[in-house]
Image (cartoon, rainbow, N blue to C red; front, top):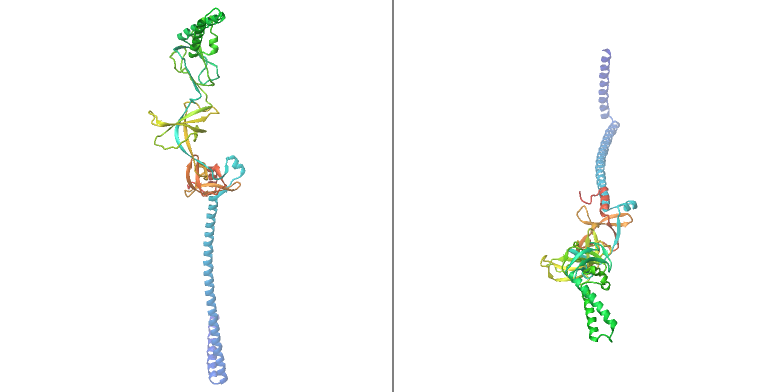
Length: 436
């Protein structure tokens, strides 16, 4: 309590002293010039102090404004830097994606396992193709029909369907009454001719010799006409009278038995086909073309025959000028080599007539073309070993298994086999060539 009172009293005293000093200072300033100077100095000091204070406040405010401006600029710069960083990062992603879209590097081991094939593309003459259904036929120029020349009965066979036979090989044995009579006539004529010749001109007249010779030649010729060979005729004798009427047909040329539609004991007429032999080293193909198709085909025009994934080269040998009344098609006959013996009469095949381009064109296999993400057609170009990039091309004409392209330089190395594998490898890296 006393302490508080003492503090208050001390404050009143100090306040009174300050008031008194201020009053004395004003009075002293009015009564003396020196005092006026001092007053001016005091006011000037106060003013200068105020100016300094104002300047300090101005500088402080300027510095604060500068700091605010710098801070704003820093924040703005930070935001710009952030935006720039994001933009840079985004551009980086796009660049990376573009690189992925353009290509990829594949090691030699993986290339070998995937059976990737790379070839140079250069301008060449290519062929466009027109399709027509076809059927393999026996070569009529090298085929042989085995048939009796008189009404006969089949006794036994010596060759089977599909068997390859040599010239002179026995095929079938038959019996014929006409053959039996012809053999008997020949035996009589032959015996008479031999007897007359031994007697000679001194015993037998000239006319008798001529008649015996003529009869012999006629009987011999009849046996030949009935299909007997010279060896078979010379073997006719009195010892084989029981075999009269039997005769055997032999192969007149080398070939394969394509037809043997008969059974033993069957009676066949003269001219009926018993067997068909054909040389299958070269076969015919009969292509059936719509009469509305205008094909300018000349002899030896090239064509391709396809059967179960295999291709065979063929050439045009004949062109019919009439329309088949049953199929209403025009028949074009081709010849095809059958070195591996995989083609046989009766097979249905696909025929592709080929027409060469008038000038050399850049063409690639159909399997080397891949759709890009944008829907454009591309091929994979190899700039360096194992480095592939997708290059857009424009498509031209379809040329068989090839497609004309525009947009590549001659000599460019591209993936001609395994393009799908390369596309899938690129897809694994983030780029989807199918736009999925």
